[in-house]
Length: 297
Image (cartoon, rainbow, N blue to C red; front, side, top):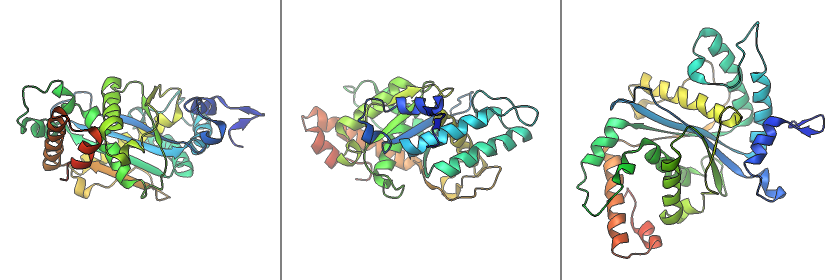
C-alpha cells in the first residue's frame, strides 16, 4: 500500500490512523472523516465574512492523501519555498500560487467531496436582534457565535445532502485546535441530543481537535476555506452567483455543497430555536421536539 514505507506506516499516515484508534481494525479504513477549518479576516468587523469549510473522505482516502501531501511539504529551494505546513494565506505570491497548485492536485487525486458554509456576521446579529427572546432563556450569546451557527448549518446540510455527496454511515469530525472548541462541542452536543434522527444517526464520535501542523487533512481544509472566502468576496458575498474559483484550472469535478443562510433564513432558524426552547420548557420530549420543529416549518 502507498501508506507503507519500507514495511512501516509513515508518520503522516500514523497521525490519521490515530484519529480512529479506538475502532475495530475492520472498520477503520471505511470510517468517514469530515475535516473542517474556519477563516475570517483578522479585524473581525461587523461586516466580516466567516467561512467554515472542509473535505469529507474515508480514512483509507485520507491515508493515501496524507502521504502524498507530506512528500510535497518536503520540497524546497531552489524552486519552491520550504514549508513545515501549508497556510494558504501565506502562499499568495506567484511562486506560492504555483506551489499551492501542486497541493491542490493531491486533493483532486484522493478526495471526492467538500462542504462549506459562509455567514455574514452583520446578518447573523441582525437576525438575532429581530427575535423577542424571553427573560428565562440564558446563554443566548452562543446563537451569535459564527462557529456555533456554521457548524450547525454544516451538520444540517450534510444530513440532507449525504446522498449527493456519496456518503453513508456515521461521520467523525476533526477541527483545527485553534477553533473555538467550547462552541463547536456545544453545537455537536445539542445536535446529537435533540437533533432530528437523520442528524443524530449521521454524527459519529465526539469531535476531535488537532494541530494542522501534524494533521495534513486540516491543511487541505485551510486551502479550501481560503479560496471559498476569496470567491465569495469576489461576488460581493452573493451566494446566488457564487462559484468556487482557484488561480489554477480544476481538472476534476468534485461533489460539493455550499451553505449560506440569507437574513430571512437566519430569522426562521432563530424562530425555530425559540419554539424548541419553549417546548422543552413545557416538558415535551426531545424526539418530539425534533420532529415538530425545523427552520422550514
